[in-house]
Length: 70
Image 1 (cartoon, rainbow, N blue to C red):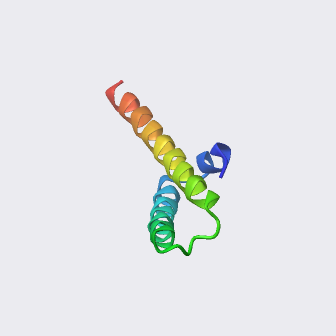
Image 2 (tube, rainbow, N blue to C red):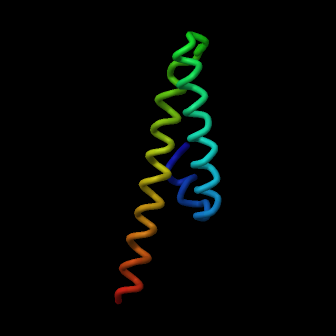
């Protein structure tokens, strides 16, 4: 997922996407623990997508707080 794709989505869409990615991350951890994980690179991609979404949400929150304080 590219940052430009993430920025195009609303906060509600990003929160839903974040929930889905966290569920997938949970399932991938179980697959790795039981030895059933085939695509090990997927763990890294999901982790980074979660971080990207959280970063952009935090950025939007900071910008909203700045505007409210002004």
